[in-house]
Length: 376
Image (cartoon, rainbow, N blue to C red; front, side, top):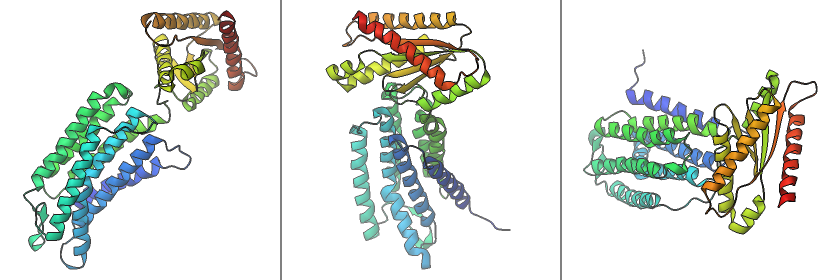
């Protein structure tokens, strides 16, 4: 019977999960947006650190001495880079596809990482034993090990605080996963300090990364980042499913009137705000099982339960009332939100398919838009 040490089993399972995440996150044909790219960078860094940890546990004497020492050095010198990449990933969700802003937390991490690399390198070159040593091939913690470990745990706390402070800029559906992200790393790091011999820190980190993938990355493909509405891909998938069931339902196509003028006059930041507020109004006007989707540009679609054209007309009037109420509540807003709406009932008739239904909605929406332009 083969007996394996605990760290071998833990690192083996952790490494397998990392490889799986790297594979599914880079599946051919999948769009690698800012979130996917920064997530992938974080995965690669944690993989490198786990490989280094595995090498560092080899005997520090004999033929494996060089690789063991190199692994130990890499772990202590560069693990703080993982925290930096984690903050970049979080900020990619806060800032969207725009250029990432500098932050006090990231600046602090850069300084901390640079100082850490210098000190660990000095300790390695001059064999000071500040962080670790291996007398008689026995791992021994140095006097700076504990301060450094506490510093890493404090950064986990700072990241948690940072997420809480910026929570309103993170999609509510994703907040629980982001709150758990630094918490898992914090618990793993604390266990790593308390117990020797088992790699808790990276096991906790990979559990956090797995949670982010299942609760955030996978959902990203089905959600529009800017507005939080469903993506066009999800909309078309749900629409096909509804048509296949053969049961009547309602559809509404929405276009923001004079959206180009809002962008040209007030800038794209205000234009983004108009899109976000339009999505928010749609979600509030159609609660429950309705699907609100951003189809592209300033166009939105809503799919909702309806059994007759009267139900659809009532839903359209409900939307107009919600827009009017929103405009009245924000008289100081630089723009007045106005929507053109095309509403139709889909009923199971021969020849009716997704394309014909979308064309019907499009014609109804443009009829409404022409009325608005004529009345201006």
